[in-house]
Amino acid sequence: MSTHIALLPGDGIGPEVTAAAVQCLEAVAEIHGYSFRFSEHPIGGCAIDAYGTALPETTRAACLASDAVLLGAVGGPKWSDPRAAVRPEQGLLALRAALGVYANLRPLQVHPRAAQFSPLRPEKLRQVDFVFVRELTGGIYFGAKTRESDAASDLCRYSEAEIERVLRRAFTLARERRRKLTSVDKANVLETSRLWRATAQRLAAEYPDVALEHQLVDSMAMLLLTRPHSFDVIVSENLFGDILTDEAAAIAGSLGLLPSASLGDGPRGLYEPIHGSAPDIAGQGIANPAGAIASAALLLRYSLGLPAAAGALESALWLALDEGVLTPDLGGHHSTTALTEAVIGHLWSQSAVDAAVARA
Image (cartoon, rainbow, N blue to C red; front, side, top):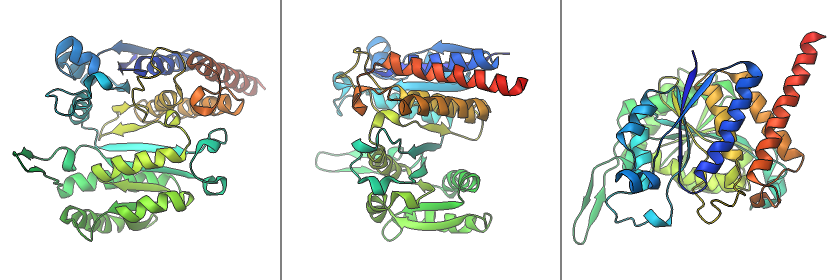
């Protein structure tokens, strides 16, 4: 039986980087004998133009029927009016809720080729290797909203169950890594944060092998820039996570490099690069596909249960960057296609080495 992967290319450079990730997945399938079936569906601005909604029902149904969802990017100047009744980001929020993906994982390592573009000094970047776990379907983004002529409100609400499930995901991930978890809140001011901290402290007793620390969100914003190497797994509520993960992305030197995985209780997940639609370079063939390719590797690992294939794809991407196949955002002159082909070339080279070892 083949695995069904729903593709949501979206807007701007989304179709270009999604196509690159699909080419890499097809190479993985051919090398390892897997069978992947792809179906493409609209979301975001292009869906608004065609259907009047950012998440058509056909797209929602296809994603719910899939084994995994790979998304490109949504939005652009054409649909950027925050007063508009229908906006591209509404499609993404609705899809996350429909899939029940409440934990957004964003791993971050700094590739040596990208370090020169980081705002931090080189010595600050040594051994930076952490994962953010952001709560994705609760909090202020999903709370009740009111608007009056001279006032507005947004309700931030969390249940203990919502907090517990994302914290368990973070504790489990920390247990698989270096066994340190940093929980971010604003417990000195916010009642939701006090519930968050109390829940984290209660769960810590079930994970005695994981060292738990608490950081207030404002101090965490500073510590990410002053000692990023000291963190392993970082977990936070929705709004704080949205802001902090974008800050952390700057550390890597380019938004084009970083992937994300949005996961729920089952194996199906939503995978996307963290960058936006970059309409200023759309159609020029110079978009960096690394984030999308790395997201495809996370798809292999978390939704399809293929860690060896995921590791091979991540290694192939790292090797392509090592040898200097760099898109303009990394100071290079290579195209989207050139980097994609280099990654696929390394996949096949690794396969040849593995075959030789097996025959020896």
